[in-house]
Image 1 (cartoon, helix red, strand yellow):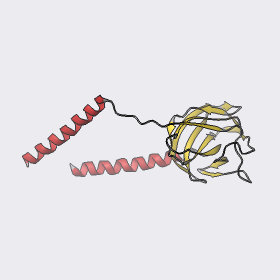
Image 2 (image 1 turned 180 degrees about the horizontal axis):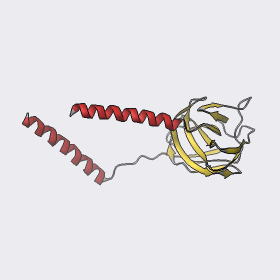
Image 3 (image 1 turned 90 degrees about the horizontal axis):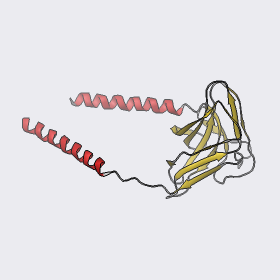
Image 4 (image 1 turned 90 degrees about the vertical axis):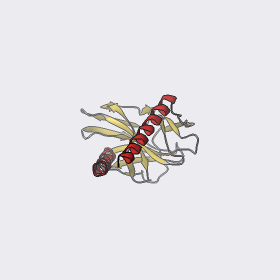
Length: 192
């Protein structure tokens, strides 16, 4: 029985690793903006918008995706994904409502599908302190020459992060599960 559990655990870890790597490869090409999450408790990202991006594709949609960022590389799978459709002009505005790590560096991308016909990033000026416009391909991002340049009209809004306490029914169900496991273990000892 222990061998089966151990093999199942190993298999699930391997599958999670494969899926995690596949998800991180979804940002093949895209324009975007890097940004810093503020210090706690204001780490809930409630809105992102820019007027500086547009794109046209034939059949597959553009996506807005948010990734953790090292300054040059995207990290892990997307933390947020939303479709922009096959065509968007005048930028975009999204409401991710995701908690970020205080002081962490992130990037928001308008990722292009393989069948894109055109994509444009309008940039200039330093609109947003703590980030800059980026052009990403295969998970690696570069900034426009000179640095300190942002996607036109970029803004990010944050709110205080809230922690959620489990409902009483969740506590009760968890307690029953723990009791059942303890009972089964005790019974197994008595049989041996």
